[in-house]
Image (tube, rainbow, N blue to C red; front, side, top):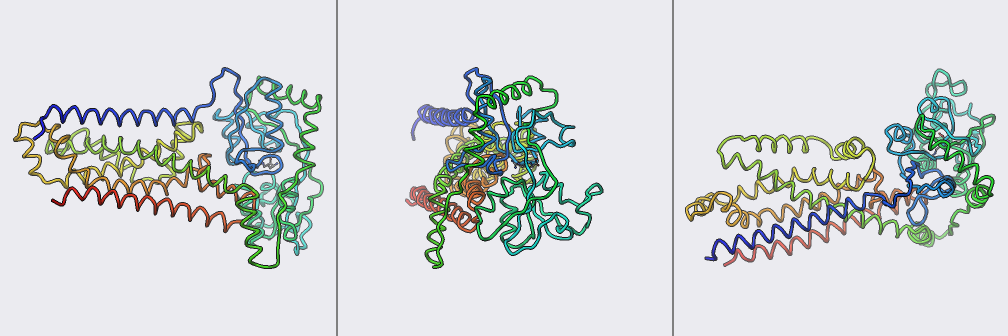
Length: 507
Ligand code: ARG
């Protein structure tokens, strides 16, 4: 038998090394979440990049567009380092209220209702509303939408325009069905699929949607409605309000604003897409369009890395926390009755397993982190979530080790803790590792919801591709295949690993 002291040293070295590893990972993740710290004034700006040409995701997966360029130019004039946060349109005003962002630029129309919650800068763009329909439709006015099915982006002025309410004088038929989408493009896809009769949306995006779907969609202007876009800041934030107004004034005077209008609004070109009557060629052209010419492959690659990174970091958090929870729960085996620790552990496992991961994620991100540091919030959520399952895996693994092992260890003079460390755990690991592997696989698939907190993972990448290409089948099948391969690869790896572990059993 090896002597006790050398066993101890080895084990403690191992523990130290793994703790260091975990610490590094956590530091890395926290570091990623934090912005730069150069002392320059930071202006956090919320937007909803689903509104071309004002804001959209460009071919490199970054927020881009007229509004974005205007905001950057203003920032440059006024000495701000502008950081964008892409979120749902209807969350923008709320984020100003909670202080998660300092300003919002999102082709946002000034309305009396919004003025009650936020302050607006001077207006910078005049817009109208359009009705987008399929080419064979004879709808030309808002009145004709009475009793029809209409799709809109949730919370926009288009939404208000077609929702039958007391003060809506045009849409008075309460049987009018309004389908609200988080993204304008989803409304457009719904229209293309024939599930709704029209989409009501601002003029410029409408034109882009139509030109990207030539021969399928057309649009008409709603008569008699003009809207003004402005940047919103939180109520009473005069410093930022004045700075933005001042900056806007300057870029209008020095010609930058007009240049941006030319580049982004007048000169926007859609990526031209080839068509063919031959179905095979058409399929190849579509593949080319979705994955190559609009850089879809890049988005998928970035997304894949994010998915893997978050899963790995979360697994580390989960294993460490899970081990602690398992040991806390095991105190009741040692003491032969429930302890404070075991009770805490039981409650923890109970709550985590009793609530959906998406709810936990939203609580962590919106409540705890106040809509900041999405990556850290996601890693912590999945780590904490997975810890509950890991704890049960570890506990079951330990309990599966024959009781006689503990008795043997104790009678050799080891303490309870020592027997655990040197005799029980090494054996339990064989039961635990395969199950842990499965937990990792589950986790990878579960992270598909991180798009909710503005992280661009694999699923979100498909979402972006759909927004930009109006193609749904290919991007979704593509990520399904990628997830599948990832899981298959891991399963294969785990099987090999497990076989190795079992080899030492055959004597
Ligand atoms: N102008 C409309 C509004 O204020 C639509 C704006 C939508 N903007 C966006 N980034 N999705 O309601």
